Image 1 (cartoon, rainbow, N blue to C red):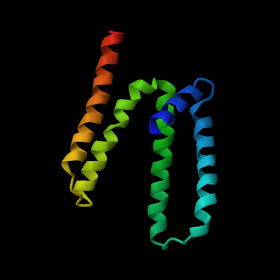
Image 2: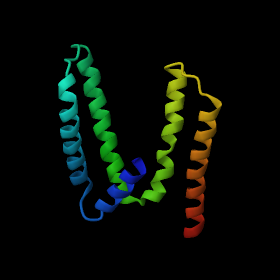
Image 3: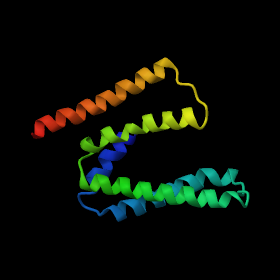
Length: 128
């Protein structure tokens, strides 16, 4: 789904600036989440509002930058970098949450990252 999102965002960016895509994805996401989440609404503890504001600010900034990157570059050039999320999520899980990586997870992550790097390398050879 993330790859499809990247391709569709790149396609839309041919006609619309990044701010338009950012607006509509934000509105549609807010409506969709509200429709499902309103039934389980619980107020945050007062001390958690700062963390929620920081989360929202980071999320909005990163989402806008992601949309902007698809406006400037081809999805096939950006996708290998998106797979580094696997590496960062694993590092955070290991160091902060004490997760343990099983061998099959490491093998799968290596395959996915290697495929992304190979695609990037092959594309650079084609363009050179």
